[in-house]
Length: 203
Image (cartoon, rainbow, N blue to C red; front, side, top):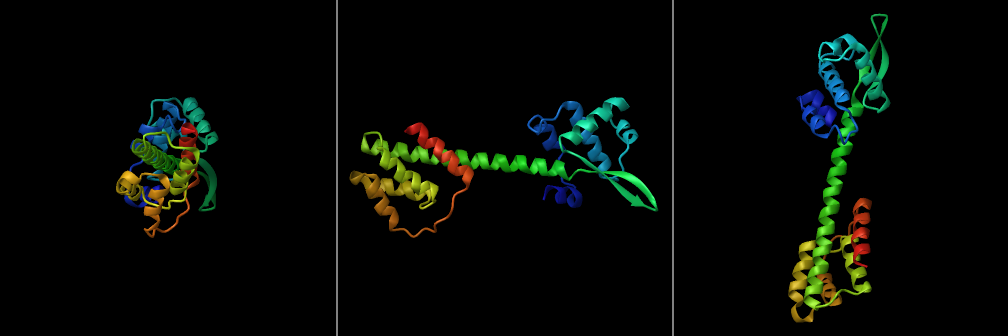
């Protein structure tokens, strides 16, 4: 998706690379060479150390070292292309876009996990405040199932706790919730692991 946006709509990934190059395990010289390759990539695919040297302040040996490192780290690939009965070495940068996409996906998963942890922790806190005691193991297990299987939306759970009033108990709140028809959805494995961590801390 990012590559298509870059190729067809001029989407800039340079800012993302500047911001995230350490997380991508790149050094500053490697980043500089990668950005130079991206600039060349916009115009042609033919690989040339000379073309890179015109865009950076490194000598050809330093450039070659960085290119080799980028190749080993999987940011670029090379192939031979035949044109007019002549072979030429061309470079490909699809892996750069894939690595950035993976980074963004991981960030999104982290945000989802964090949101789930906050929701579960807040729900447990509301129950314990209402009951005036810590929740028992089986009560925590019940709440765990609500969130793991996405049986009830978080806001519905909070509303049911509020509606329970003086009849506060996990079972009673569940009875209120079962009166609502909500589609059952499978939870992401990453989120499932996050929930495991929340409940392990409590238990």
